View 1: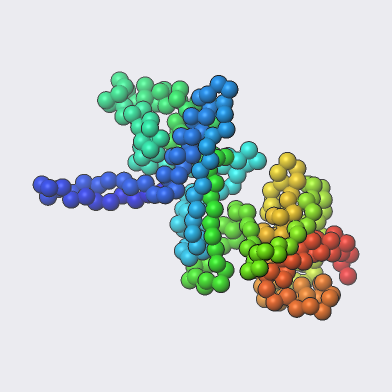
View 2 (view 1 turned 180 degrees about the vertical axis):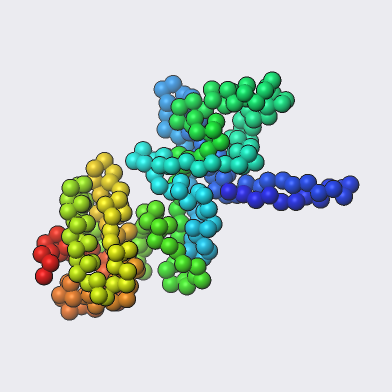
Amino acid sequence: MGRLMPLSQPDGRVSYRYYPGHFMRALAKALSYHHEAIQVNPPVPPKEVLLVIDEINRGNSAAIFGTAFQLLDRREDGWSSYDVDLSEMEHDALLQMMGVHQCIRYPSMYESEKEGRKKLNELFAGDLDFLAERKIKLPPNLRLAGTMNTSDESIYYMDSAFKRRWSWEYVPIDNGNPCSPPDDLNEDSWRAFVRKLNAFILSHAASIRKVEDKLIGYYFIRTRKGVVAGSEIQNKLMFFLWDTVFIRDKRLLEQFFGDNKELKTFGDFSAKSALFVERIQAWSGK
């Protein structure tokens, strides 16, 4: 979000100033664009804002995000599923960057805090009403993108709960020869696939540590307009299976394909994603 830094004054006194971080600045810009767009009649699509986090796995990601962690869950319309509270200092800085800072300067602008709060409610009616309550959500026009080199061995473990909240895209070394993803699945087909996949995972419980924690939930990949994208299966689900579920013994996957070909890299496994989905759908437990 930001940090509070001491400033030395010429007379020797020390004051403190809040410096918003990159995330807060990107959020303020996206919310400003959204607010401007809905003022137009008829409303127009807001400008997009992209915040790029380079080498996201080099630090303690979940701790760095802090309370903003739960903002990563998004509804189908793009808004965060949940909001988080801001401190008065953070709220002040956010509104200042949005250009409506004067609304919270109650003593100088309004007769009372109640009047100032009323002004905020009027200003942020509709989609942005949470701002008047000193809360934040990620708007649909704010996108977060992180880069990761999985060969970099960070001292920090990126937990599964954090990873689940992102869409993934694998970039192979030979990017000029991309592999086709499996077909998209409707919600019923996806649920049936997940049930069979979990049965397959449980059939190897003796080789998978804490197997119950490795089972896939129906919302591991969220549907969009009733469909789970094949690209999400290829990138997000397949990586979870490779990096978390079958991390100890890749031979189980090699035996499942039954073509006597060694899976040396995730790229090898990802290239078989369409075949993997077909095999799981046809799997009978034998």
